[in-house]
Length: 238
Image (cartoon, rainbow, N blue to C red; front, side, top):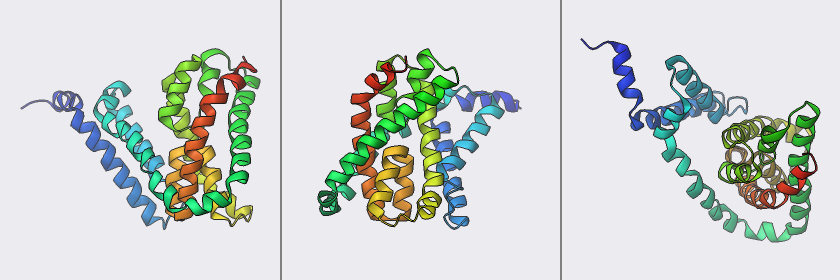
């Protein structure tokens, strides 16, 4: 009989295993989210990330091995981002009426997201490539990784920071907006899209379609603006 460690060693090298594990982990997270009646604390992405992290740690599987098998999910980030054009087109009339306030919020939100992260990190003694990795953490993952490479940062660190930023935003956005008594779905969605990119946008769609559409707009515009201003803001802290 073949020993179990040898069987696992063989299976862990198969790409389909980690793709399947990713999908199963998310389905478990989504089921937990529904069972909690939509509690923002039980975010499906957060649950899936914790489950996959535990599996990788317990089995001693390198991240590179996991990513090789699950990279199809990473590839789908691009088409998923483009697909946000549908809700954007459906809410185009709302966008036109709020264009000027949105541009103002975009500039303030994008600059604050970059500068605040760099200022806090610099105050804690972070320098060099680690500091550069922080600059694009509020942009959507494919864009943030590219910006990090151009700035001399660490793309893998940036990817982790992007996920952490998105999950944090998705968890706190609804309680925070309710506490601040912000009722305008356009403002709620745009704010979370600028600060928490794709994961925050997914959360916005769970709450309200208009909020989700504006979150998608905020995510796209912030990615563009971050690519333009991140080098200049970073130069002030280096």
